[in-house]
Image (cartoon, rainbow, N blue to C red; front, side):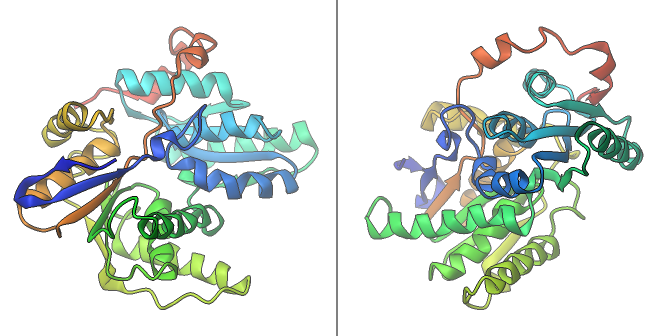
Length: 325
């Protein structure tokens, strides 16, 4: 989609990953296209980690069930909102089992409990999938996305962007794109990763490190990847606010603008903050003339799935809902 005018004459396009799958879209779909076959080969059970409103856990459980992969979701608390409550209800309905944590210090205990429970039930150890599915294998989905973008540019679906902007949570989307842009010959496109979680999780070093490990996986498979340019990747730390899941005034305004001017429904944790960064960077003249925003939030209707989910978050799981700031 094109035609969104930003300050300083910047034109914006949107890559509609929200429509990546008719049942549940968003940026996790591309990762799961690579992860789920590997999980099937490993016995069909995974343990993964996410926040209370994790889109990754929903997508893994929903799409995994279609191919016989069971998901044990270990969840940590997240600031409360209606969106987070709906996501938590979906995880409780779709995951094989949800393991709530009291906080970050409780994570190792609950992960071990999930592993032992899966081992007793299945007779073999489950596979571990990290937060967001952001492993070198999962990143291959976003390497493919960059190659797809190059095809779209050649087909004149959009001009070559000067800048590309995505959220950086578990960093797999940004890392895969960093590698894919090099493979696609789009080395002049600046990749902006907007941090939405703790700095140690989403820094230039962590994105670059995951990108290098993805390159290693490709090269072990026989691919030749041009050297990654550190200057092509910019990680922005100024839009996270109070932390993961906490809304910001800029995100609230950005979501209103995205809805009214582009018909995009964004949320507080990832896409709202990223669109806020896009507006701010454009207003400060920090972007080129053509920007591509990747909408990583699923826009698939959820009414049918929510109708089969618990009507309210059960008391045993309300500890995953923190008071929002």
